[in-house]
Image: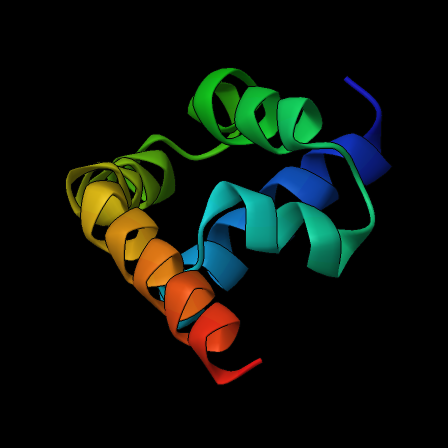
Length: 85
């Protein structure tokens, strides 16, 4: 694996862990696709640093468990904005 890809995978993992970020937010921050982020932190990172990958997986599991709440909040805000018009 090329060195810059390994470094990106580690950088993504550290960013996600430190900021509790979603895959989508990390992709936007690093200017890569969500698929790239997912592949980096699920497949590539396991070959680079297994302990770091476990930490990232915990954050991703939390995000997945909470996504229905964030979706509901976004919908609520959408309808509140429409009422103000």
